[in-house]
Amino acid sequence: MQEGDFVLIQVEDKRFLRRITKDFNLNYKKRALKFEDVVGKEFGTLVNGFYLLKPNLEAIILYGFKRKTQIIYPKDAFYIAFKLGINKSSTVLEFGIGSGALTAVLSELAGRVVAYEVSPEFYKNALKNWDTFGLCKNVEAINQDFMDADLSGREFDACFVDVREPWLYLKKVHSVLKNSAMCGFLLPTTNQVSRLLQEMDGLFAGVEVMEILLRKYKPVYERLRPEDIMVAHTGYLVFGMKIM
Ligand code: SAM
Image (cartoon, rainbow, N blue to C red; front, side):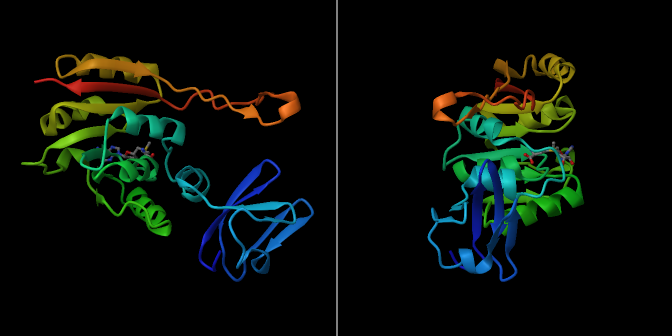
């Protein structure tokens, strides 16, 4: 590990993601971890009760991204990417970018992502999140209301929509998707899902509604049991394929 690198620090059941700088200093209970304890060490080393690990994309999103909006959590994001059926030859459309969490996952798996965010503040924050971790080089990010986007002549292999009233944009999304392309949505309430289903009728087929519940276990081999507290609700996922 060199100065400037990011390190995921696991101490007991806590995780921290930190950049290694000269003034690096992490205190946990009565233990301390300083710059000289980390720099020059291999990932995987144990120092004074702190495990020094290499952060993966999930850790970067959960512990490294600055959140100015709700984000799509990795448990949903990785499934969304799978469900959209994207690969390195796909061009994916997405709005709104929010804090850029889902975009980071889509960007890893797709060839290109074209993504819109209406708020200048959230747009700048997402770009900073990606830049800090060297992510999303294949993302064309546009600070604009998707409704005003000029997409004439463009076609997309898949789309994901994470805004409050997605039904307002359905016709426009439909017009820029390839036939049979998958479109996904995340909505926090069932009322929104009902409204969306009504509006998808006649535009999308094979519609599915689902939610993903992730129940973690305490990794204690002699007393293996679920965690007491879980994230019970993030959002409902809706998927459908464009029909002509
Ligand atoms: N999926 C994002 C993530 O994982 O970080 C979070 C998205 S956040 C919940 C919803 C975002 O949609 C907000 O940042 C909001 O400003 C943006 N938004 C709402 N309407 C929009 C529109 N018409 N065009 C573009 N962005 C829009």
